[in-house]
Image (cartoon, rainbow, N blue to C red; front, side, top):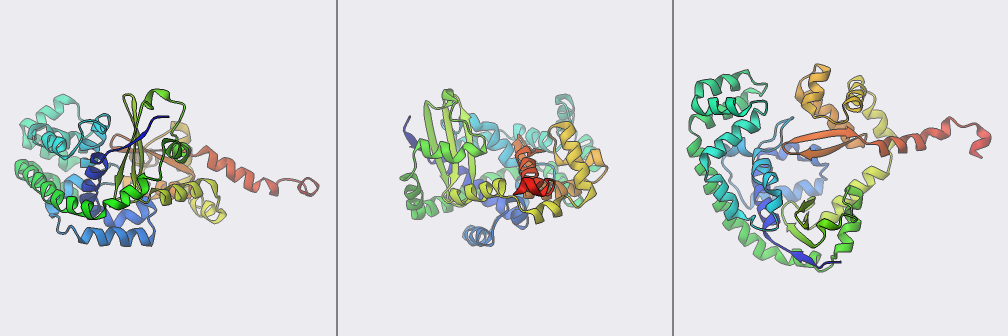
Length: 349
């Protein structure tokens, strides 16, 4: 079994992104991440240390019901294979410095159905781009933010780079004061421990090709984060310093069946139809569910989130989308829990 190597940058940069992400999505955290009251107090207290964050960065960090945060997708997820090598804040800033590529990323992120030729046309003509924004399903606030960015993208990109540098100075000081928390957790970890704790999330210890090097990187602000990723000949665990509370929360959610939650989740006809759609397609986004059922994407997201919270469906991040699939183990638990009501009395004794 290889040694568990501690690296700073993936977790540190993810925490830096988290500052901005929390600023624009705080009101959704409890629902999105099943955050406890203590979690929300922790996030809010830390966020105050790094205020203010300009409203003009809204477009880069606000998530929509059907699309994940632009910055996380394009400047973290897209470089997941570099996380254990060259990935750090300087690397991210270098990618942002290519302004033309950044603008293209914004267009492709928010209008994923456009092909390369259509993106080229948008880059060449604001008139064409604004027509697409106007025809989109985004709400008026989001459309306004898109218009404002495309009118003067250079100033928004420069502001983003400046704010990342400014918050880096603050976050660096925060890490110096609190780094002992990371060392306390790291010193109690082994590769075997992490493999065992992450097995129920789909991590397979049998994949030897990714176990030549095993790395761990920690977040202090996003303290409950759970992430593992495969790089060539390496595995990275990106986790919060309080990650075990998240492990137990998810484990309990998957193992314990609460009849009241099951009844509440399946009491709505729309959610029952949703399960049929997901079963037929195998997996789909909330946007696809909305289209299939003829309801707005935001409404579909609300319903599928209810199903996900009770455990009836599982969510998996693929690029910028959240894909939902049937959680078969959950329904196996449901059948096991309630089958006694179908059995004759003598069989139950």
